Image (tube, rainbow, N blue to C red; front, top):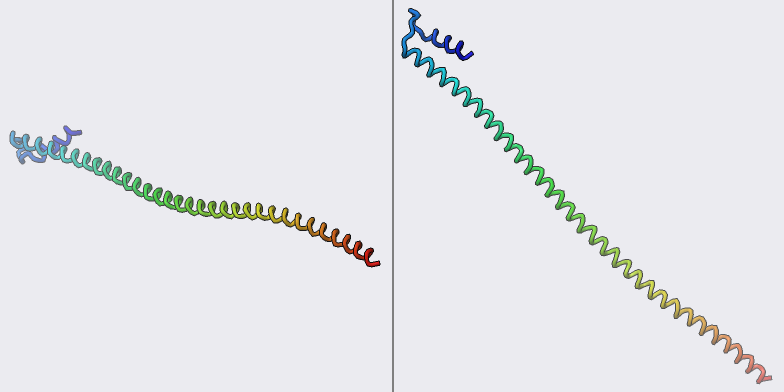
Length: 137
């Protein structure tokens, strides 16, 4: 293929007599070589550009993903703080309820004691009334 290309290039550069001078042949080889090198360079440059663009895109994608993850982490931290504060409030409320329960139990015992004392006093009062009524007859 390259040979065909060279031959066509040489034929086009030859003079009308069909005779080719050495300088024409050298020029044809040089220009062919230069064109080939330029094509190869442009191909590798395109590959390099696409590879660097791919890396750049990958890097940008990674940065974007990291930002999303940082945002989610921050949201999770805020939610955790909120849940902890709710848990603390519930725990404090349960502690107060427990304290109230303890106080309530103590008050219940006192109330029971007071009721029994009250019943004893009523019984004594009834006995005293009977004694007084017997004495007054």
